[in-house]
Image 1 (cartoon, one colour):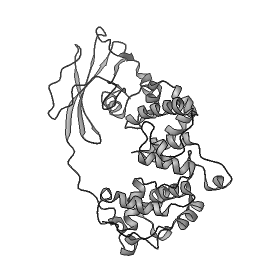
Image 2: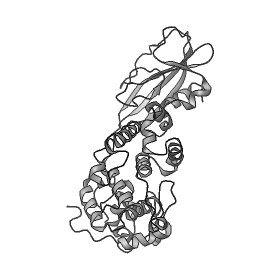
Image 3: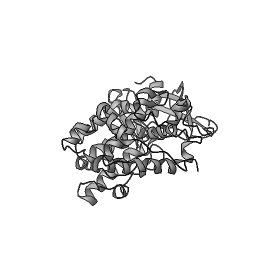
Image 4: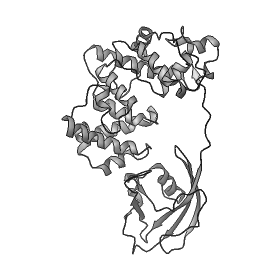
Length: 350
């Protein structure tokens, strides 16, 4: 076992550090406000945790503020059309999160009277809420004494224990060690550990001299904390190729359509494309026109690299009735994922 006898994590030192250095985040209740009896809003914490999956705090802040302005409560979000939620999510990526977000809001209103369950087990029964997110909400909002282990904490603990194997091979042991340290102030402890990973024990920097876990950190004692976490061997990412077709009518409007309700980028807005395959197919234009090749865009998905050749033409609108025509000035308000914004930009449309 990689961590058969892990030494303790000094939670009092972590909390003392957090009381002085907690980040000011729009979804967070500060330690001082917690002591004054102000409790975190489960809706805001849940929304932030979903947005923060695979995304940075800097990227999320503006989206969070816009969402909470449009939909201040879970009831407001549940009542919103899915299309509107997808439009506001566009650019955050991993679009299944937006669909699950809406489904979860509906479930909270329909099945729980608009009140989030107050345990990790209850929260995990909701759509799109897994083990990590349920633990984070339960700890932060309800002080359930449950370990909250995210990517930042993986790094902190891998260094603290000088873990000689990739984190994924010792996840249960790390969670168990963290669980032993969870104090009564479970929510503040969880956020403190997240802040440590984001600001002190960062991916490319380890400011050991100001870290509250300095004394017990084995990687610091070795003198090379950036050696950890040990990276797993990465499988080569396959490449898929295809064509994207940007069609404009005589007035300059752009033809758009909705992707299928299931699968990658489900229910998002797109321009027509060919199939995406290992070998680049011959272009088969969706309408008659003087087609022009603009270049290629590359987009990295989790499991593959996509290369799309971008074509454009002015076409007659007859027969193109599966989608709609959008004026260039309205494209910013469409539910276009980053991939298709790249395609439009390559074709000369911002």
